[in-house]
Amino acid sequence: MRRQTLAALAVSLAAPLGACASMGTAERAPLGDFGEATLVNAQGARVGRAVLTQGPTGLLIRVEATGLAPGWHGIHLHQKAECEGAFTSAGGHIHGGEGGKPHGLLNAAGPDDGDLPNVHADAQGRVMAEVFTPRARISATGPGAWLWDEDGSSIVIHASADDHTTQPIGGAGDRVACGILAAG
Image (cartoon, rainbow, N blue to C red; front, side, top):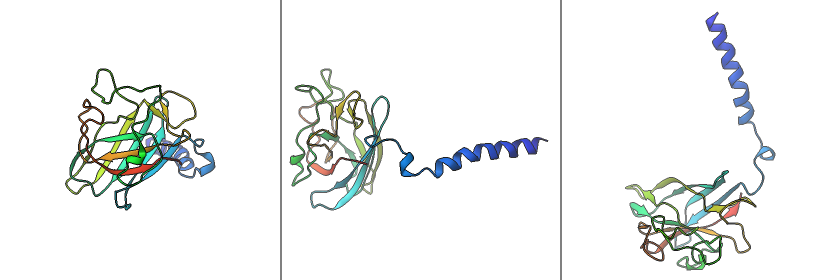
């Protein structure tokens, strides 16, 4: 009797899981709820990607990258969908309001909308991280700076760690990887 009950339970649980696995693109969340960026280095070589998922209270960003110096790296959301030269074409950090706030997750008057927690590269220079921000969005409405505005946005990884207080970028140094954010 107990064996039959467990078997029936397994069958009833497997049916919904099978349905989830077979969901096609038409059944995904509407455009604007997902986005991504291919990360390139200063030589233009692909070094990773960032995948954005809109949640009800903010934006989850999954970052995968290679070829970085081992250690902590600042990572920020920037104003323009451009990744030219030393990536200065990406502009400053995004700002959802007029004038923005000072840089830094630990700044009493901050943070600005582009500030994110640091990511860590292992001894081989690989990053696999998830960061979350309530100050940016890819959905058409909601709180935070809208990344799909008229000039788009980008995500930038810096050479060093962000100390989350020093102006203007927390001492994070050169921009070593950049990705243009696009709707997925």
